Amino acid sequence: MGFKSGFVKCFFLSLMILFVGCAELTGLREEKVLMTQRIEDLQRENEGLGSRYAMSEGENARLIEERNRLENAQRSMEERLKGTGVSVKIKEGHISVVLPSSVLFNSGQTKLKKEAAGSLSQVCRIIKKDFPGETIRIEGHTDNDPIKRTKQLYKTNWELSAARAATVLHYLIDNCHLDPNKLYLAGFGEYQPVASNKNKKDKKKNRRVEIVVLTD
Image (cartoon, rainbow, N blue to C red):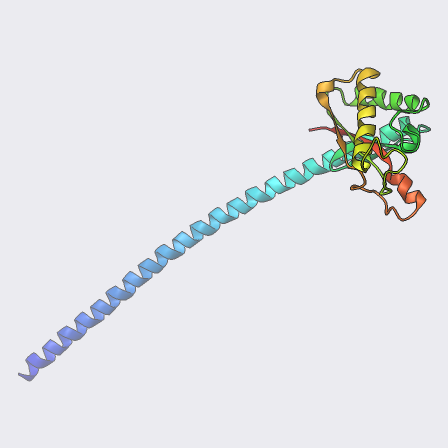
């Protein structure tokens, strides 16, 4: 009787050890599967990061090349526009030719001065040579002084800035023979100043027409 009882106990103990061992083995297998999946996920993530890094490096190189191109164009144009009263800047990734209103118009007027033709003609020659076929935006800008003497013609600075931009646009079409399908105008009034408007010097900077070359 004692022998049978001991045998049964040993048998059940062996089964328990076997079941525990199987459970541990199953757990280890499941853990191995999860670890394998995690390793694969990390490898894919690493490959993705490598790809994005390569793309970032390529994009950065492209941006540097584009910036250098714009800066070279800016320097070249400034050199050729010396003495005209016109300046060149890089604006939102584009070349912008800045023509002070004092170069183009009398105070409160939209008719071009006679001497403005020389500066505009030089700008035209450069645009036709350097940027053939590009889309051009002509922007009018003013200071924040309210319209007074010509209130009957221009209700606000918006109207005045748009009218001045339109005058330059027509000059580019009529005298420079630029493609009208590639030109459009915008009147920003006083709302895109480049200086504070707190004194006459700053107000003069804000009164301007910009010819923006919208290269791709």
